[in-house]
Length: 289
Image (tube, rainbow, N blue to C red; front, side):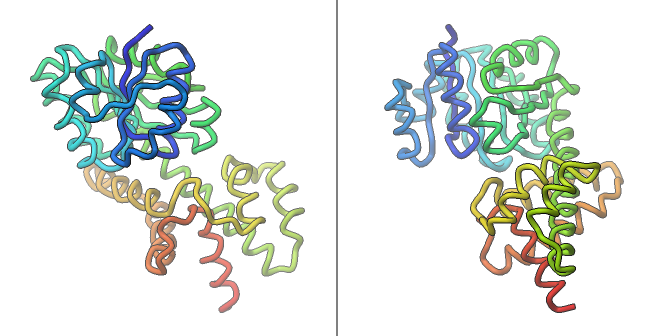
């Protein structure tokens, strides 16, 4: 039984912390908005009053927050009370450069850090079927791979520190392309007078099918724009994609196109909608045409 900490109990982190608890670990959680921890307290999970309290109890701490600066802010509260050798596992999507710098800074303080961003959506977190890209030294990642088993379908080391984030950004580029394909397909079908339910069923079951068709298609059909994965968070990740691509002189025109289309939703005040709402942008373009 391990003494685990979990910081960040949002739509992804909340279920992940619960999986750790259900696997028999002693889990302590903390969230910036305390109310989100009540379901965990009710399940018998310890809720820390502060990051310092959590760090003092735990030999390994998972983080699932938002941006690079959020990870740094949390670590600033955790590290002073953490034991030497504490393993920090960052499930957030942040800058690859930031991840590498954090790993170096923590190593100098006798701590360990693995960047381990996740993909699989909110349903993957609930079902314990996430894919996890791990960047760090082999020994630390080997330890992480055992820890994350309760909520991972696939978890692998993809390289040294920062590589997990590089792989996650590559993943987000693929996600964006599949999202555009789904929304462009269905908005065209609607404009052509085709039955959308039939279109989704027939194309999704053939060569045009994808994770986006399976998971976001029903949201488009129902005009359900609740996240899921929000426009705001997708565009945050695309910002990191642009930074990483610029650093290696890589072209990402598809990602830039999807980001520009999602920016329309952002500008309309719909940043909390699901990314599948990209369909509405394309549908409007068809209507104008």
